[in-house]
Length: 144
Image (cartoon, rainbow, N blue to C red; front, side, top):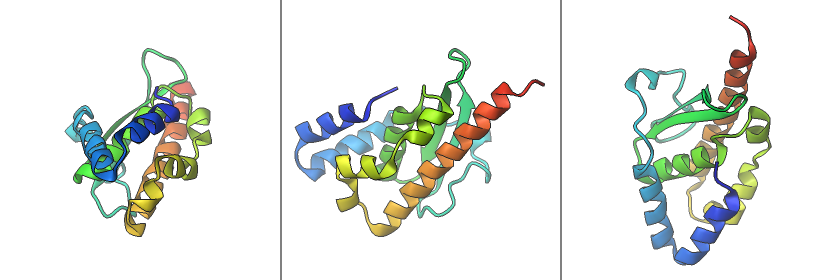
């Protein structure tokens, strides 16, 4: 679980947007591979120009916490996905639901750097992450 302030501090250290884009690309490259069987239509983010898949699941080592698998076919959005996964993983569905995409965009100045279409896609991605977290937590707490 990473705090938003850690990313803000890193972005401020990097200075210009070329360096920040490179950092986002590197975050995406560090994202663990998503199992192929999870790249389903149900896990694909609709409303995003890039092909993005996200899958939330209960953390087997931390009851009540959610983890994510994710992948994207474009480098910068994959980096944004990795950033959102780091901000969300290890939190409960309620904590994930309280994360504010507007605050993330504002503090990282992403609203100024991503096109309006990408902006909409990232919001759709994050909304799907929240919905999946709620579903994963409900499934984990429902007896078989």
